[in-house]
Image (cartoon, rainbow, N blue to C red):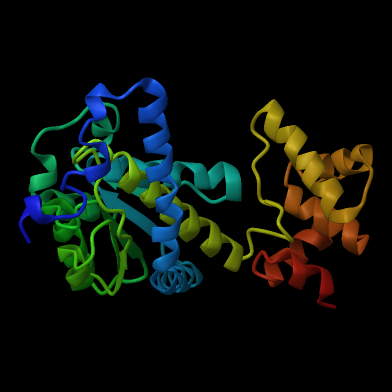
Length: 298
């Protein structure tokens, strides 16, 4: 499919006079267009569910979630990956973000990198892609060669594959086990897919990582019990999480976290089962990190 025919590349009829609009009017039309993004994502929920199940399966067999993309799409994958360790207590190697052109491309465009499918193969080989992993290829246009090359290589080694595009009938959909297509339509600024398409991709990445972490024991109720208290804000949050999860007063929660070596989840199990650190840790290990199982198992 030619680039010019894609919905994300066509002109938006509502913004043909964008350059003559008042600031108030152009902000209004941007806001109105942005409101269509969650609706478009909602239409793709069945495919997103299938993708979450694939990621959960990979995590349960010891595999990794690996985002792969170029430009804005790649940056959004990297952003989601780097947020997982502080939010869910994952090892930095559990969720990876690969961007065409390497790490320097996050801050500055690397021209031509997205057009080389072989670069994605090199990047996946560098991280030791295995059959246990799942690769999520992100491309607003749905036709980026770097992403297609990565998805094809992942499938060749038996890894699970997911594609995320912002056009229907996307080319990358044919290169993935699960195809997520979010029809965001023409951008306010023609072809600027960092706008609605970027917002849609961020929403999808939020769902993929958050839902898969919830399903693999990283959340208790709606609390991020595996949060890493690495700064003052997160120390305070960890205390509130333990207090909310157990009903303990803030001082008791803080003391339990200290006893647990800063691990909020262990502190929660300690307080809910009235056990010491070693027993709580053993319960969590037996429950594969799931708090509900840890507090109810004998």
